[in-house]
Length: 319
Image (cartoon, rainbow, N blue to C red; front, side, top):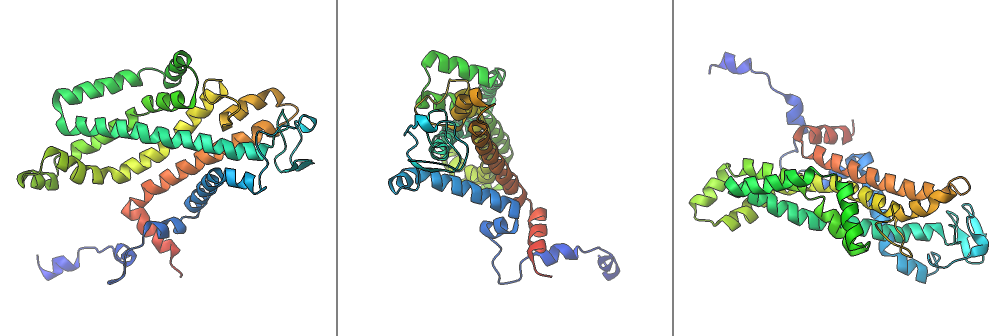
């Protein structure tokens, strides 16, 4: 190519300006999170809810929270900022005079715990079957994908209701049912990504060096699935929370005296006209937590895009 031809080729200077300076480390995930205020607020909200749920027993022991199981029939269905002999009820009391804020925090432990354990189990099932289907192919792939198609053909909530009705409502049964009805999307995405990675040059190089199938899958293919699976798991976590709330609302999930946000909605619907706070605050907790997980999933998907990452860092620089 001549010098005149080289000079006529357009150069994207903005892309070069967005690159980190020589000798400077590229920004980490924390810096990218701080640069996106909406995602930062979502992450802080989830961290705050998680820390409050984990330290709920300590807060009751130190007198910061009122015991969620302590009843006060003379102070039932009281509005927020109600003061009783037990203390100040910031969010009011329920139909048995129990502190609503304490029940929300203890309910977060169950709602978030059920979602986290469910995601771990369903993720293990989905990733394992997706890796096997995508790497092996052939009849194994056809069998696993037909199994996915058959299970996705059934309404998930109806299937969960039938299984829990037959097995009995409990936390263990709820987690197992949700895990067995939520692994299909993870398996599909894992299989599709594995199919594309199986033809990559680094996989062919590992095979030529004599690496076994298990080593190739665990050390070469699985690490390249981490970002995609993280985004999918974040989205599935919100859906699992909504499923748990729906089942608990219908009486097939968490049972009294335990508290979960869906169960609190179910117990407070009879008092909707006289005690709006019984359903408003649990509903807000479910909506905001689900929204926060979806926002973080969207942020994680965006920062994997180099163009969005450069724009985010360029907007963060002082002018």
